[in-house]
View 1 (tube, rainbow, N blue to C red):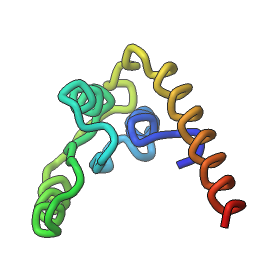
View 2: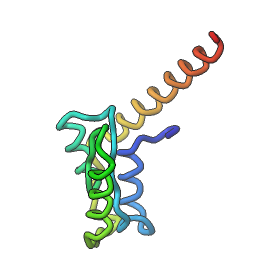
View 3: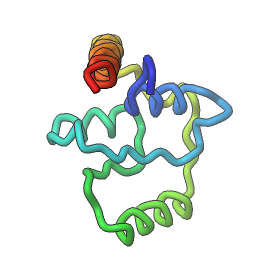
Amino acid sequence: MPRMDGYRLCYEGRANQRFCDHPFIIYTSIYTSPGDEKTGVDVGTDRFLRKPLPASEIVAALQEVVTKPRQTHADAIPRPVGLELMKEYSETLVRFSSVGVVKASWSR
């Protein structure tokens, strides 16, 4: 996602009155450490899944978060420490990966 990673999307969704009670799942192959999972919990994700997973586990997680009642208020999720740093990191990562894609396409 340009300019935003899943953590930021989840945080912004939780901070928005319109979306704060919607379920959020982070499904990642990049952010896989226990600290990454803690950050996901801190920004309000309902489930943190590491790729790859069998489809049955993904479906089970989706069913779980959809059926679980959620009463989150937009102001209930505190702004995580380092969120701006993560935003800058994500933007840099997107910028560099875009350059890599452009270079790869020129070399063909």
